[in-house]
Length: 254
Image: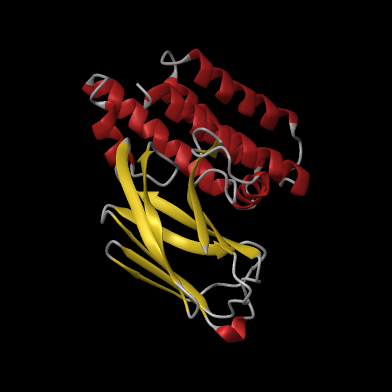
């Protein structure tokens, strides 16, 4: 058995380990490219099919795993979640085998409350054939759309004044609201209202971020539909994701 693991960083839009399979990046882009993902590829180099298996991960208690997904499988996989521990179990009746001389890929969606913090994940793969350690992987969790504005403000105060940090923290909260709106049937004018608020909060801080907001606003003003069709929903989703990325790169990477 061989297990490869990597960390997908939404701020880089890529795996920290770039040699990972391109199809894994494509899967994340379809599912949720705005989140941190810990991905493992379980390669069965034996002559036996593994019909029942599981993965157990241990990590810092400040980090959380929100869900686990197996590539190509849409239904939920049974799991246990405790402080600093996450387990998935794939029973035989599910029919999710790891074929002989084949592989199975699993993705774990990560969440953390404190930005710009280094975490570590390690674990073990279990099956009737073998138990294989999953080597520790260390990574820096910069920020994503799920981090609380309060935690972000604490970090911002390290490089900005109290007043500016408060404004930027409010802008981050507005971005979170926009991010949630992107997953709903939201009217065009509601986006425009939020983007105008966001522009006021961030004016004068970053030309790059201001341009991102202006581009989003321009796109919404040109769209005349009360509700967006599927094509436009996809474009709006990308705008929302890019807002998060640019905000983090401009205000938290220092």
